[in-house]
Length: 253
Image 1 (cartoon, rainbow, N blue to C red):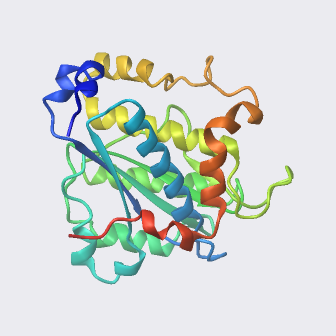
Image 2 (image 1 turned 135 degrees about the horizontal axis):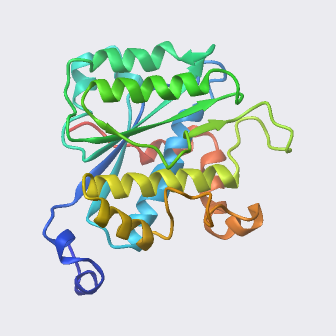
Image 3 (image 1 turned 45 degrees about the horizontal axis):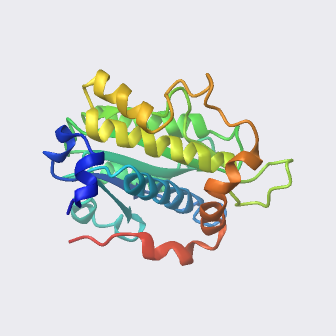
């Protein structure tokens, strides 16, 4: 329910709406490492989303589903789609393309239409040159083929590498800059969930969220230290073993 404070801070055009849902779906464990990198990245995006929704009093809810346990049940997988204003699908890379597990997810839902829904994806991979762009574009192409209006965070492909690093990060750990991009995708999802097809309102909401799709012009962070106050706690949380994050996922009705 909206409090009196919400009435002063939320535009009347949004008050008239029932809360819309931004739904995240993890569609693959990480086949090489079993660290569930993609699942943990989705948890980071979810936590950013929930914080933003609360901070800006937005008529949205954010949910998170792990599809891995039900991939062999196509009828159950299809239940994950209806009702969302925006869908974010998370997968991982196998060889130099999408993993067979993520393709199983899309094949299970390939007769469903998501026309009118905004959709995007995030992908995790050990290294930056191991097929991540192929997997990312494959996911977006599939979502477009199902009728979705696909989006990214500006020019950024939302890809997180968790190995092959020289910056001292431990394998499997996400960085503060990763968290900033998770937050950017969360903001893009918010804008598309509320104002798909309304560029003027979308632009105004981007300003309210203190960001722009053209993030590289004046918005890109100047240092990791500047990001720590906002993102360090979430970073620590998603860098912990995935089992500590299982409570964030929703259950099918």
